[in-house]
Length: 202
Image (tube, rainbow, N blue to C red; front, side):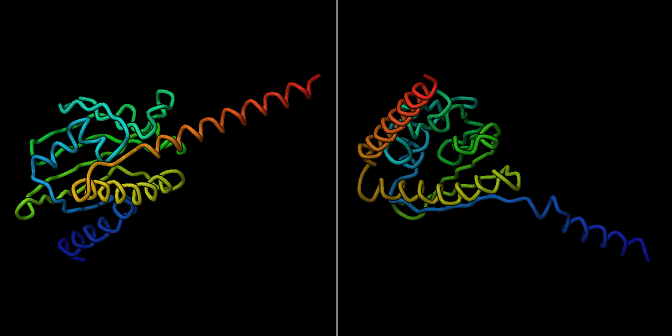
């Protein structure tokens, strides 16, 4: 076999290698009725995040600055949501990137990090296209569960962003009330279990 044919065969095998086949990413897109500046502010200010993404946040739009999204502000530190995330890069009115973690119910993957890039571009008068690219995934076990989780979650986040400019900011009142009810039920169940264990030891 000639050298040129061997080289072509090598390239083909490389393209079919397991590492290449397993590389994956999530890609989402939405067009919103907002200017480029409004779209940018939605992702780079606390007020912008609270209007569509989460009930609370800590946002410092600089390289290494906080991009901490608190889906459950009343939870213990480390369990609020994306507690320790940070901006990796910012190109004003064009792009941000940040590291990201899995939700608390996937602890093995939560201890690690993936990466998200959000891009902004004009999409006609008074509209902006927002695209999201989420990469850095492992495979199997909790990685597959996290991938499936964010496949749904990012779609919901971008839908909320669209609704924010279609009908107004997100109202988190009921969401927060549900979290408090869940916490109260958990405390009551723990207290009941503790009382039962104490009685059994007598």
